[in-house]
Length: 527
Image 1 (cartoon, rainbow, N blue to C red):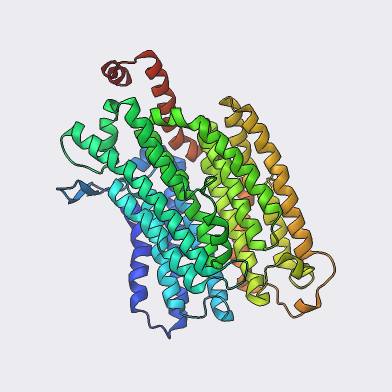
Image 2: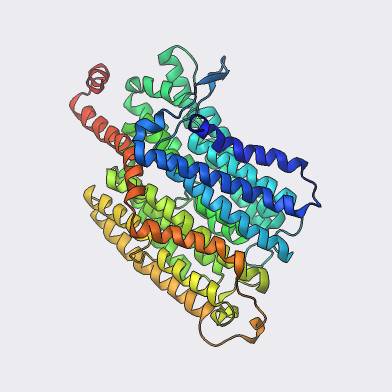
């Protein structure tokens, strides 16, 4: 099975999507069961991939790549898959959120308040989105990478527009359109950078090819100006989905309007595609661009952290609190990337994993009580822990993870980012990031206090707490956060093995550029 492991990770959700077309809409058991089975299969495959990465390292992962096959030879499009430690961790994250989102949606479907209307179409779009996400993490052909990137983004428009919230604070039509316009515009900007790489490598290699390996083979002859501006297009395009300030405004309202499983995939996985793409494509192909622009990115990261946190403090809609909190936390990811240090960039990837699980847990818990209350307005809730003690307890643990309490994966990853920023000389940025943790504690503790504790609100006396199988996705995600928080080394070692050569390449190129200003001498030195 290992020889076809990477292909299976893409084919399982793709085949499940195709099968969903043939499932009778009246067969509710098949409609809601197929995504859960596909999610369990993907989780098993992803864990196998992670095990190979942790025991055999990057060399073992390289052997998993299937033979490269030309699909459109005249344009240089190839079926090319590959995985490293980053891919392995991100595939595990995607599988966790996919499975948990499927289980949460089963509950939502039964209440007839979440996706009770047209569940077949909902799960079809959900599975198609997941297929695109796995493609982003595994394709090593830029054409198929970009195709997968768009495939992962487009279904969110329909998921929000058809099943989104009707609450006044989150107009689903506006949210769906804004999300689509921002992410599509960002994707077009990134496409300019990708096509520039493709064309430049074509001129150097003498043949058209979207293969990342062919572009890297030509990189030594990319001049500094080309790298700097191409990196700018790639970074800005991918930064829209991270989201980086000031391109972030689509994200909180997208979180607020999306159904529970949509919010889980949106915050848990989609927001990670941009940072992954920067490390996977922009860093290796344009290292001089990374060295040039990342100090400026560190300043924008501070805005993400502080601005997102302060705006979250002013919110009264629970989903908006978590939505702006997500923008703030992604600022730490940007800061780690900007450090161009191994510990900082490894911390960024680990934070993507930790934040993805944490926000998926947050939105699944909010979705649970929203299905019954149809209300997320914090002043209207009050005392929910009386009726929902299990959900309230899980929410408290989630808030602790988000606030960076030691023992959760978020603490370990954010600490790595701060060390990386300090090591890179971004002292003020590191100090500000510490205050960002304090801001996060303020709005999270206040939200927990106002929504779950205090006097009992008689309006919610008939709420039902999670029981039986309903508790499984919440306990599952909470266990992941605690396990990787108390013992993060297995995850960080796998990430470090993938990130280290990428970051060291950027550092080495910067050093060589200062020592060998001539392009030919630089190419010889790098060899």
